Image 1: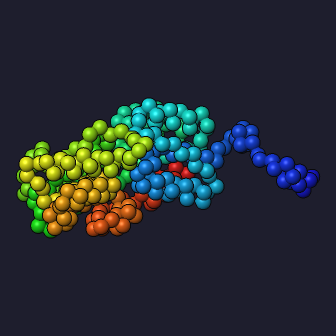
Image 2 (image 1 turned 90 degrees about the vertical axis):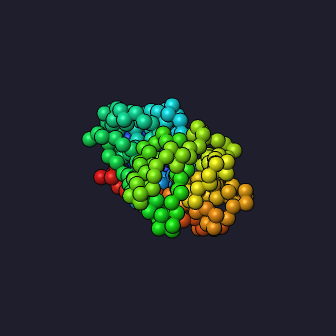
Image 3 (image 1 turned 60 degrees about the vertical axis):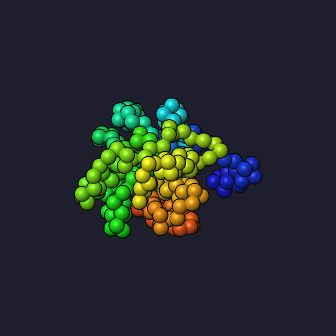
Length: 283
């Protein structure tokens, strides 16, 4: 009977009904993943880490891009709950600590990436942005720089604020005075179809550097894409890097060594974070 059924299924190109299978087994083999944007290669690599680990355990990934928008993110969460995914890996843009906890209370297993969520319902995988900010500052000071600025996108995410605090402490440890002018902030953060947001932000930040009354010696950029865009626009304006101005980024994207000059950067292991998030979720 089994042989006859498999033969008929093959002839008819039959595909199992996953909804029906879930009703019988009460188990889903799908994991939801929500990230702020897929245009940043960091999140693409993070997603790859989740995907590789999920496949290894027989799970499939349903991916959502929140487009850096709170309402879109909430719609993605609702959609994944309706699809009865086995769990959720999310890099949320929401500053509301109760949002994910509310979702967790609905019975969904959640692993949050770089989120400041103090809840037993939510598991977390993170990166020490505070220490990274200090490391970047220490490195630039070791090169002899003292007039250093932080170039960042809006301080709407915990990771960026921690990076800023690490930068501030790094300056303090080297007896370098603090002024608000040491922080350059790009305009509103909005996803664009025609241009990667970070490149647009880098252009804005480069203009701030070029029009400053006093040009800094070195820049700590919030991430690699912003750093590479900064470099591109500063070089186009006639500056030489690192002869006239040093730049350091965060993430260690593959592109970092493809630009000229190659970008000095601090690694944030996206693939490993994705794998770990999936391992924690399945555990």
